[in-house]
Structures are given as structure tokens and as C-alpha cells.
Length: 211
Image (cartoon, rainbow, N blue to C red):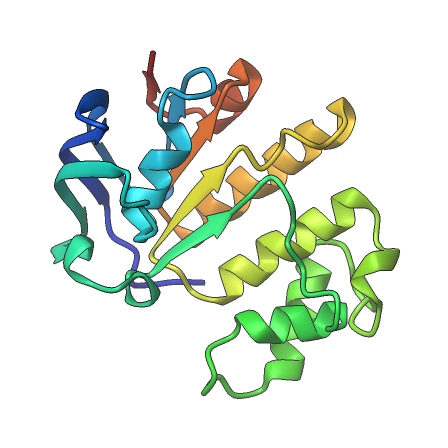
């Protein structure tokens, strides 16, 4: 879905909270690979994602470089970084249909949006769901729509903030397979933060432990 994907490089990234060292990460994530950052609550996992995405709170200070290919993303505003986020909650827009949520993810100038939405729904096993109210979907179906909306936005890298933590055991494994498979197919570097070792195993890439 995205031919512009490049490696995601975190070089000497250090984050402090009130002067106290919180984390230090040095890693490169190749296109299609997943870097997993594990640690307990308060270890700085979600703070690292906020730093990369451009939403770091002023109570934290950070140093280091974050690059996508040759682009220093820290020099860009959040909306221009080309970084997609997938959270614990699907965060679908309740006032839009399933199709409307997917169209929202598409670039504004993208032609043939209806055809793209139909193809995307078929790809995640939800063909014919375009007019459905997101509130009528199961948790797993909502998670699928959220994933596809993210991919349709054509990010250059993806950040995953414990996206499987609120799913039941069987659905969790199904979504891991879907998410990591779609990221590999799209050739996108991804950074997953989690406290679940099964997430890290399913991701199949490098693991960094915090705390």
C-alpha cells in the first residue's frame, strides 16, 4: 500500500522526566519488521511513541534523532511525519459509517474512493459492511476497521500502543496475525509497545526491555 516506506531509525533517543532518566533506545527497524519495546507501566513505553509521533508532553525532555529513511521526522510537525498510530481502542468516528471511517483515512485527492473502500473491506473480511454503524460491530470487527483506516492513510511507519490488550484471548491471536501480516505486506517499519510476551513473540522482531 505504500511504496515510500523506509527504515525507522532511533538514534541515541533518551527521554527524561523531571530530570530523571526514563529510557534510552538505539535501534533501526527495517521495512516490514516490528521492533517490540516491553516494560511495566510507567517505564516510558507510550512516552516513546508520543516522542516519535510529535505529541510529547512538556513535562518530559528528549534527545536523539528519529529518522524515516533520510528524513529527520523530529524537524516536522506531527501531521507531516507520516507516522500512523494504532491504540488499545479502535477510536472509530461514531458519526460516520464504516465506509465513512475508511474514506476519512484516504488521502483527500485519492480517486475512486468507493472502489478502494470496497477492496479494503474485502481484504479484512468485512465485505458489504460499508453502510454499517460502527457501534453495531463486534470488538474484533472494529479493530479490523481501525487497522485498515490506518493503512489507507499511507503512513511511512506505524506505532502500535498495546493494540491487542483489550481483546479476548482467541481474538487477540487473530488480530496479531492480521496486523503483523498487513504491516509486512505493506512493507512498513513498526514499533510495538506492550507488556505481553505473546505480542512480542507474534511480532517476531527485535525486543527491547525497559525497566
